[in-house]
Image (cartoon, rainbow, N blue to C red; front, top):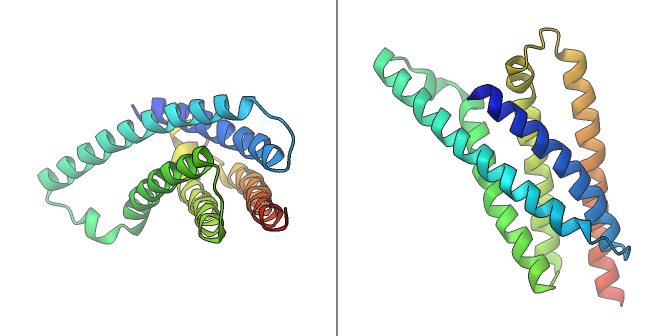
Length: 171
């Protein structure tokens, strides 16, 4: 199940990059009908990722309780992965609502930037276990490449959200 989740994670990563780029172009006025399709694909893959993540979390907690281990109390990354994941889901729903409603104000912009920052953090703390599940032994170099790519994509998204906000103010 971890391998399936890792494959779904790669699909989410690719969809996120494509959705960010195409969505940024759309916010800047370029007609991009594929944005909705990318958004729907991302939504479905995130739903699958969430369901698998919940199953794996429950499984881990059950195993920990049987072993009487204190893993849950001392593992910040375990909880950071879950907390950022659920924050992403909440902000993602908000993201879909504001773009469906056609409104976009300062609070919306701040929350969209927060979404990008949390996605970036979620990916950053999950790169290592994802690469390990694919059997990548020397993952530090790959990890750095992925972090650079996601940082660039995150910056593009943040800049697009800010430009979109100021275009709305001045038009």
